[in-house]
Amino acid sequence: MAINFLGIEVDKYEFRAFLTAVVVMTIFIFSMLYVVGARRSDVPQCVNFDPSYLKPRVEKIDDSTYQVFVVAQMWGYQPSEIRIPVGSTVNFYVTSKDVVHGFMIDQKDINMMAEYGNITKRTVKFKDPGVYTITCHEYCGVGHQNMQGQIIVNFPQAQ
Ligand code: CUA
Image (cartoon, rainbow, N blue to C red; front, top):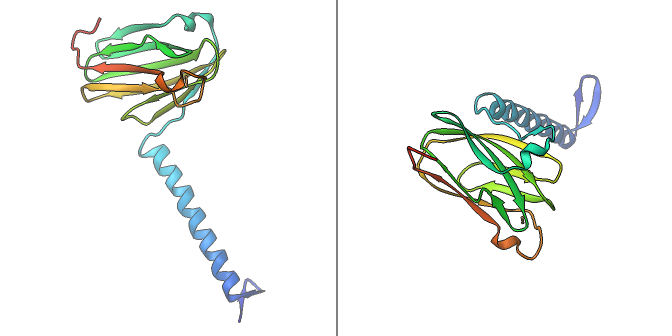
């Protein structure tokens, strides 16, 4: 059976499929606007490469803000252990000395790439104390499965 839609003869089932597509696309678009707006979701930022990022370090900016320069290489991270106080906001700058590695923080929605010649930045807030494991989730050679680091969040006086 045909339906007249804006002067066009359309099959009933085709029209339903069309309506379903419009509804689904509308839900997708509003879902994206919701996560970007209300949930303040962000994506990794690319920072211009500078050799100073190849020096692994934790820098304290103020009582609750740190910047961490992470260098990934076969098969570990430097620094391999990051100690920060509870409630810290950390800007991670991640790069690689050799091949492509991953940088995924357990219990956080952080999933970054560590690439030679590139810097990837993300800002993460650590509200809860604990040990957060960093895992390489990008196959990078025979030692890949052991490539891990740690973020230890419980030291009010971090070094
Ligand atoms: Cu580094 Cu997998």
